[in-house]
Length: 394
Ligand SMILES: *Cc1c(COP(=O)(O)O)cnc(C)c1O
View 1: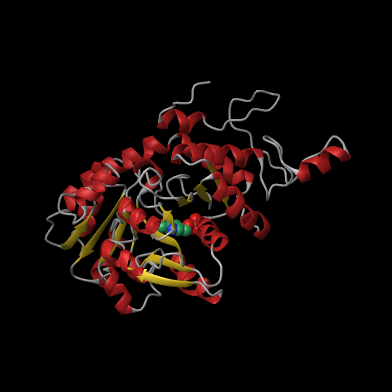
View 2: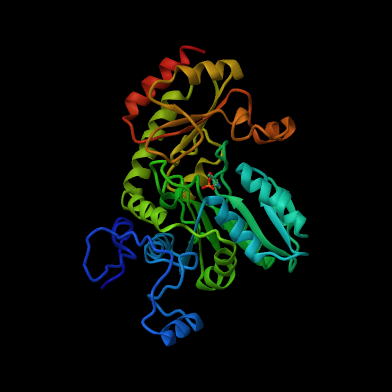
């Protein structure tokens, strides 16, 4: 079969495995273990697992394997390991690679739980982390310690202020120092970000977000070379229990069939909404990488070819006005997921980033009036009307 498939074909068919029944839809193999025809066969399989053989669901499962093959093909990596959550993927990619005495350079603008791993967990095991302003390549360059720095870690588009990191630029600097580039690509989505083509060695996702896309299940994935995925990440993940369940894999497989269509529809709406909000006197800033006013607009277009599905904006009148605005929304829900079919408004200062001390909030641009908007699949005109009506309440 020819495999020069385009994205949408890959998303529907790649990795499909059929049982002797020839079922059309991907089957859920809700089984923890597998039966061996003989004791000798069991012995042989424990010695070496061949192509389509499985031993135990924590090590691998046919449904999970379908998902891993499909996302690896989408991402353009040799392999992938599916994990129980996005955080299991971030933790697994870092901890499986690093040892006491190693050094990591990381962008400062991170998802709260990622920050916990880099700030608290790694230090406890003797790994030193230097935090830099992700958008400033000079800081990346200055922080590298050739031979000692083992990884550069960043979110390709940061949460919640949608700042981009130049993947090519950081990869060049990190590779010159002998470090691997590990990218959390959640906000940029696997549709818009080609992180591997741009120099990333390992890409991690929370599949809880756009890949499920309907807010049903937690999941994650580590994508990389066969060497990294099977020799570095897999032993750590399968022995520490962070594997994806077959049921979750089935949900993610189904999410992937529509991933390209959904991300593009959401990004089209996000672009319309950002334009409709820009210039509104009640807003201090409208942050959307697809707007010409975004300081990294050119980088966003070169790196993603799109502004993505997320918008952030600042209600100048502050926290109480921001709360009045959120409470007045009718279609858009107050929650903290993203990439969902349902549009979601989040107040980062009091929820996702509540625990950050004020100086850190200030440094990251998390103002009292900042709203993060995950644009869903509703009609863009309805969403604009909802936002404008709620803004009238501030
Ligand atoms: C949500 C998220 C995670 C964590 O994923 P979970 O599936 O919630 O564990 C990590 N990084 C980023 C950027 C995220 O948005």
